[in-house]
Image (cartoon, rainbow, N blue to C red):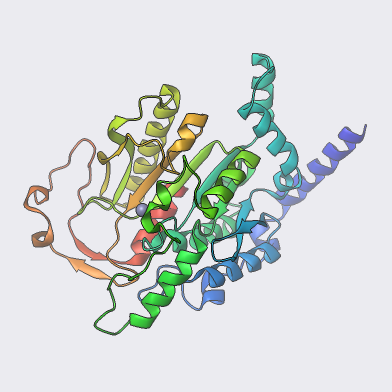
Length: 372
Ligand SMILES: [Zn+2]
């Protein structure tokens, strides 16, 4: 009876939701109203504190976003992730977490029981920004992605995501680095050193190799992330980077050869399919220049964005083009390596990029499209 009563309450909630568009009920603040500029604006980088300020305001404005404190960073900064889903799903999130746990650790579970749980459960999807803090669009796109999802929550595509997915969005996966890089860039904008590299490490002790630590968990950040994953057991982990092979605009799975010998074949197939779906989605929006396979192989099993494959999680990374920081850059075909000047379509590079302006905002929009 209690269950039935709860369900009836849920039905009336759903009915109320259908009757009144959510966007009309809840006024979602724009990023610009909090940051003072839209994510990806020329010469502007939001630091972690600004980003968190925005996510806090989103949480206050929407019952479809819940900010969760997950630990502290190497520098002692409080670290948060945002759970984004329908209000109904968030109200039952512990039940959905228990289902994800049971499916991830299925000892004693029958096939029928597993299928029943899979039908009842929701997909937990991890997407983050800023593992490599110098790849600056990553931690800017998370702000835009949260805004777009919540401000269009009553439109069919967003509704489908919010109803079926418990989206685990990390505003940044390396908050200390995000602040360091934003501070460094701001101090140089408008000077001859505007695009100069930051002369210290954006992850304590190991810098860029924070992505090589998944098997050893040396860093505080790696441990927080690992513990979080074992707590929530996501089905998909998507980590954004920014080293697309020039002049392509975004690199997506499938990976180049060789892949790890012990990767479960079914998970490799799933990741290949997701990569192709992202490319198709980008193409349908006119976002050209997506490529696959070379040069990113998946031989090394200790990447934080590949190791979860061995735990039957579809884990992968993507690489969007970057000039430097938030400085825009104009490319002509003479900037391209000679081997890339032939713009005929290729099987895995169907819409070669022809050059032109590339701005941080372009990278943010490619990332948001890929993530969605
Ligand atoms: Zn990277």
